[in-house]
Length: 228
Image (spheres, rainbow, N blue to C red):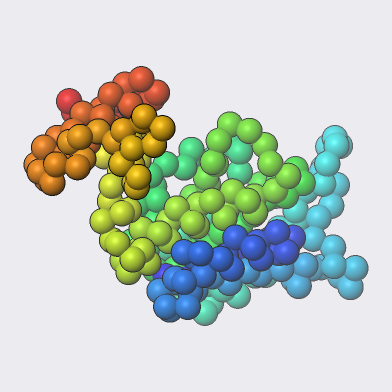
């Protein structure tokens, strides 16, 4: 997979992609993440990529011309299955969307900033608008990092144990069950005996029951998508 990220503050994205699972995925050649500075496509020598909104009001708006330049250039080099715009009024990102995106080959992610982008960008170029929650960030960079992390970890061979991603919360519309590790007892707090039994079928049954219990208590809204 290749992910091209368009941003006017590229330094915000240096850390998220240079550590842990995402870094290893890039070293393995499984994913290529390229961050593009929108100011390299500015309309003038002052590196201008934004302007005041027509009609007045506070805040600046990212202009269509720099964005069109870079998207047209990228699309002339390869085919992209989705051109994603990070925006608070986009579709709420979820595990189902992450699963679908992980099966694609090339993605463009456009990070909004200031008051957003000229609406004509959304009309002409964007194929998918995503939000990570009902709140507003200073820009789309951190939201883009969240989505890319969630998507890349699902790609085969990214995780050392491929079953890990398949048993994450939300994969089956349930939250993950409790997990334990050594020691088996700590200050009188014991690991459930079933997990020490070695009986795989009973352990899986316990995990399912605990996942259902936790989901019922914490996120009952998820059960509308689950056939009990």
